[in-house]
Length: 446
Image 1: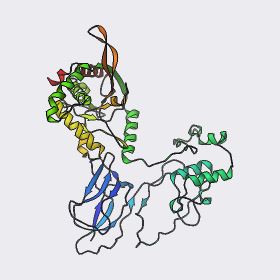
Image 2: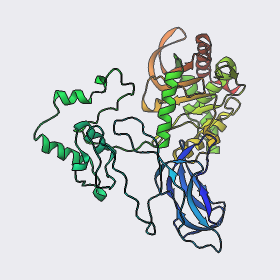
Image 3: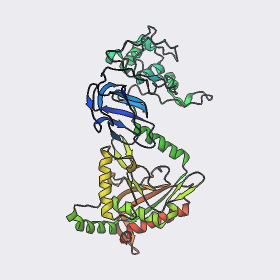
Image 4: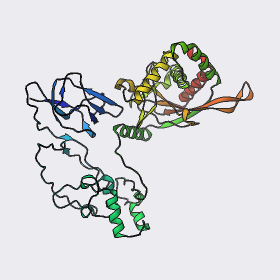
């Protein structure tokens, strides 16, 4: 019997993923430990290893398939002595294409594309016409891009009347635009058409939000969201909708911290370690959370967890999204250790090589946009955490030093707090402790 290779769960919360790339092909011999594929989760792209030996007899799920459920069969491995003939495989659930009216559609099981040995698929039953856009009636599946389908729906163009100019006869945006030009030569979008595309003019009894209208006259490219971007969108939308944020801002004089950083870096040159300003800010936030434990908490609905250790999640921008690797027990770590770990975690985050335990957890977060010249911003809390520190750029400003006006390097820091878990006075105490540690950085080393 062939061995079924199934979609693995690469993290405790993973339910589905994208099979980004196969590293083997049908007919290849594999042994335990060989790399088989690259799988994209909501946080990283990870390599999948073989646990059995044999021959890849069939690849069921091709490269680039989104929404592959954990446990779904993705390939078959023929054991020793077994024929490497292609075998039938169970269907792999995959997301259905977007509904023509912008709403949700039921997901239907689909199978991998037929191989040369496969028989031709049975003709699909023609679907009824919807919103003025009807599929072909000759039993063949209509090949049309999602953008072209939306444009045809908005313009009231019957897709079955168009000839596709895309790959394999696929109907693309240019075909719909051409049909529109034939119907209304030289005409632009009039007021009536503009109103028909306006989602704010839907009937009051229509409870489902309308999709944003397509801008047909602006060049651009539409791409599917990655699993990471979908997760970011979902989690941050939930955070702003369900977490009552409040914000507190302090201005911090960085001159003493910058002087200490310079002195420490001179002493660390022989070890090849260089402290960044962010490393010291991570340490300051962790020390402040230990000093104000009522702000180092997590809201759980009916309970509140107060942590005795400060694990700081660092926001790291990576291609296609954002990830937050965690400096565990940052309050007790030396600055040199924080510098080594933060550099390593950030580099592996950008390469998509983090392990799940390295970006899960954290008792609070820090997000630093100072390197982009951002003076001040409000960050969105990353649930189930109850606070995040947003750090702006250090810049020369007029500042009162020893009761006299002077020029100092000043940084604005804004804390975002979950008001369900942290009261305003507690948040203010944390911000005051953070400011004191930044302006008197030797306190972090004591």
